Length: 206
Image (cartoon, rainbow, N blue to C red; front, side, top):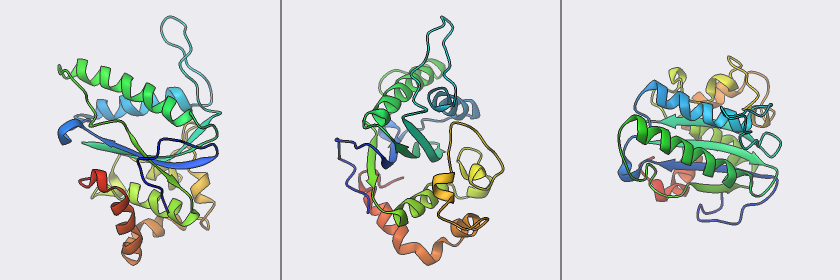
């Protein structure tokens, strides 16, 4: 099962559930542009080709060091499921992502101070069964999860494809077309979902 999210020594070839929320439970995504900027910041680090800023400097490129498997962005929090090949890849991504997004958000919305409640939390996933169920838990965050634009479900259902996200590590655990039913049939696995929620005790309102 997932290790406690206080773990700080990250490993190579590890799967992690990453999550964080807004300071004082405030919104970190207010409009559609906010969601898009956050995803574009992920893309520039994980796409299959490096990108450069306006001065020609290459952004920190992590495509070969880690993979994003699934995600869901909600108004006051986010979830990412990742696989990292090197032990520092995740912290490198989250440092760049958090700093750049907070800077954008504070400037746009004319606010000051920390945007996120604390340093991101990450749980090591050490069983395939939990990997499957956490991907489902992430996708079920929105009440209207099938029509929510800011999760990776459409990539799992083969409606979208991109080089910066790799759902195949999860989908290979299912027969073709089976994942959609797995997500919708969550009631039969409520115990597993409750265990995942317990793991997120530090962020119980997620």
